[in-house]
Length: 353
Length: 255
Image (cartoon, rainbow over all chains, first blue to last red):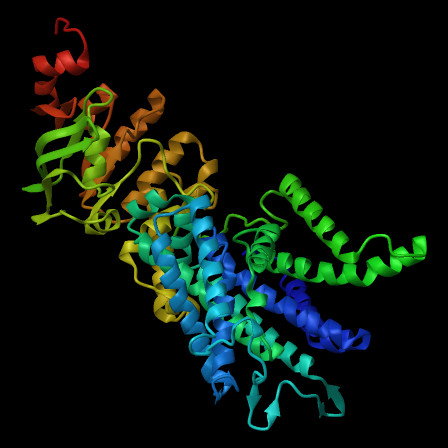
């Protein structure tokens, strides 16, 4: 950490905190849809931060990451919906979901330990698809996941009478369900950012980075690469599982549709675009890629109507076009991402002899 | 007493007998040279010793304990650290973090320690940083502590790799051609560094082509040729051995 003007830093932190606190109410003025969009953006940040542990820190290219999101989401759905008739409270299910996802992280990570680069990507891609296909077919002979129809009627987060899904008057202020979820998501995000920052700058984080840089040298330096890699898979999966559980509760309906390969690719793009290994870069990448399509959807149509008087190109087409263009430009001009990870600087006290 | 003993070490790669029945013994506190022409099996011997791959025959006995079946990280934790012929640093990390990673096996903090950052973890981290700084100081590149390892000049990269290996607190430090690519001044400094490491109580195993360095710093040498041991003894004795001269030192000349 470089030592900057402490007052500037403090003012900056306060400004960001105030902005984040009033943001949902400002967005609600434009439309509640924007609060929902923001919530999904935060979910994507959680996913991108989880994947960043595997891809950014440990350097293991994982193309099936969305599977852990699915595991977390289905764990929540099965334990808090009419599907199995279970309605456990969320603070019990979320840790269970995280643990189940971590377990799957280790199970899916173990066979891939000797693979690197392209080969690892292909195998993880396969695992991601396997999980989705299992969820799709686990409706016969015993109906567990309800197959492609998905699971509906999932409980929202609830503490006694206080539900995060229903609107409420708090101190004369109309607080809608999405706004309540926004604050919960923000709190979880803060927690996960802190966990990520601390992990990165620790004995475990250094071991991950050593494996990314040179696996053979890492082993010769006394690092049990098998254990440390599995730990990366498990930690990444845990965050995916937590995000999945929250996704389930917010949506109140999930189906295997939500966990297709494109979602894995999207999360990976966020990590790569933002800057692999840099937590702030990854957050920026996730924000850009989750908001850009929505902003386009809201601007492309009126712009074309104003210019040509009719719709020439569908917003969806323009979205993919711009997305592709953005990725090409980033690869050309910022190959390490928008905010590349920098060499960590330490404040070193002068010689004490 | 004998620190490391190799008994009948053999290793075959397909049709190539890289090592055949090599036995040797390294005494605690000495600088032991491993020499031989290119392709003689020196690096293979390093790799089977440090657990990169298992030997086909034979065992190593280190400090009275067999190293049989240990993986590379376990060999390192047991007290054998190494450097590589073509430098293998963590190039995008700072110099000090390279050395800090070398402390991995000697420290404990896990995920919970990292997340909670409790007192024990903080103290351990503090110790890791201090130890790493001292080692950087010892090899003479403390001023470059925060520079990315990949940006250091060649000679400093070699020093950094030695510092990282020393961070394991090894009983035996194995250096694979540390003087390769160095100029005369750097070689002289390297010789001094090797003497200083030895003076700190670490036994050294050294692969080296630079004959002058070998003659200056090694107490005893083992000479390999085509995977076979052809001589073992004091540098001066080995130098006059007919087979060694034939295999390694080239045509004989008047002493």
